[in-house]
Length: 251
Image 1 (cartoon, rainbow, N blue to C red):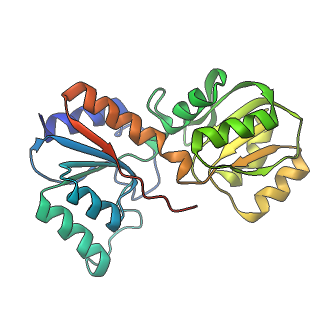
Image 2 (image 1 turned 120 degrees about the vertical axis):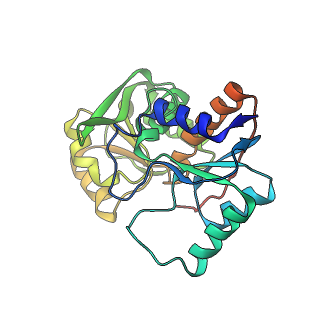
Image 3 (image 1 turned 60 degrees about the horizontal axis):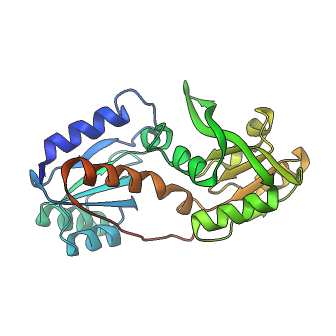
């Protein structure tokens, strides 16, 4: 057992949430106060109403998510928003969110975890965004077909593939989530094969014209690894009970 304040302070510092830029309204950090006594912590990708309900039913004291409850400024607390807030507050469950700070963490980040799981050689940060390096890149010692098979195994589902470049995977870039629109910039960065979550329709045709291999692994599936790694660390550091709440969107 540990105190909520202690855990939050640790995550704030480890993830550097005050320093790492993000989209306006992301509100990284503790989004909802809860009980000070934390015995059970859960990881999830999204702080959706079904996830909050499942966490409460499981007796979770602290829910750690990648996509938090706030994105677009002030909203009316009615309907599903009210139900979500009320469900968490009635149970005394705290909710903590980390978006871009978790994406870019050199060990716990979505991109770092995926690069490691795929076996990329000497993975290094790449792709400048708002003064930080958002993704990871490294050589994959095999064919693009081998990489596709590896991605399917790591994510638990085959990716949608644009096979427009070399038969060898070559230099692989990883930017999880919704970064498919960056195919042009990624190709200019010297990437041969690009793994992301999703992208607009035109990103496929642009990748074809650029000779870039792309694997669209799914926004959700490419972003489960970071929160799981973070919660695993909390479990180990503070002697907590932990779990992952899997609520895939299919996107």
